[in-house]
Image (cartoon, rainbow, N blue to C red):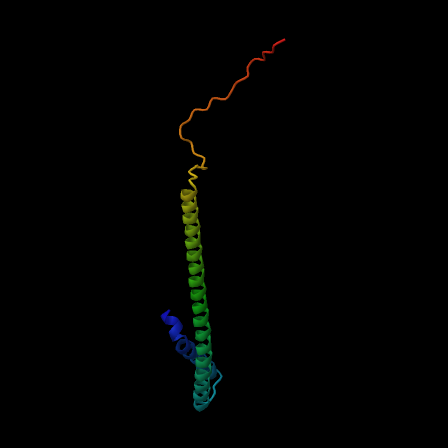
Length: 121
């Protein structure tokens, strides 16, 4: 995160060094090199500031959406708990204590086997 805040300076310094090296390679005058380096430093500092602003806006938007999704998820959980509580209260009030859940509680069910066919004739 610290590099994002320093991005304008890093970008302008790096590009100024590159512009200075290229200008020196082509044997431009020293005054001309200094002017080009100054202009490139200002321009790339402004570009770095714009990039930093864009990155920070994107980061804020992502954080806002994450909080919004978490809040929506929390509201959904609360709504489900309220519905469950209302169902439980309605069952208590109506006296309906039937458990509709299917569980294996150890009952041994023996199916009727029809091994032989006996008919009354």
